[in-house]
Image 1: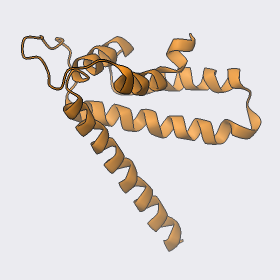
Image 2: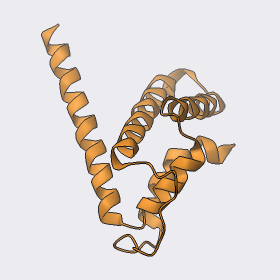
Image 3: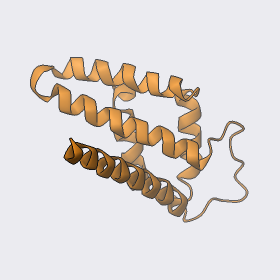
Image 4: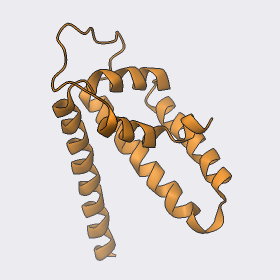
Amino acid sequence: MKNNILFIGFVLWSVFLSNCTQSIDKRSKPPDDLLSREEMVDIIVDLELYDAIINTESKKKDNKDTVNYKKFHLYNSILEKHSITREQFNRSFEYYQNDLDFLDGIYADVITRLSKMKTDADQAKEEE
């Protein structure tokens, strides 16, 4: 269960610690249910947002087990929202991590989208 709870941490960790090739090996067959770049960005944005929300809300009042329980169920609900399984996400991620430049592009899109969301939220706050 702990592996499921720390899903995002392991995903991010694997990007930096895995021994990946510099480009997708053209001989390697993509999974039949490969998620598109845009789908990957959408899912990772949701995972990062909800993870931040849980961590912020839980710092003072929840114990570690409660936080992990919330994360587990929230991650599952995000995957359900996108109509995918954890295995499908993992297969797609593993395929894309064979091309670090491509994966870096996915994360650049995630950061850009999260930054825009923050800017929009800050502007809305100033207008209040």
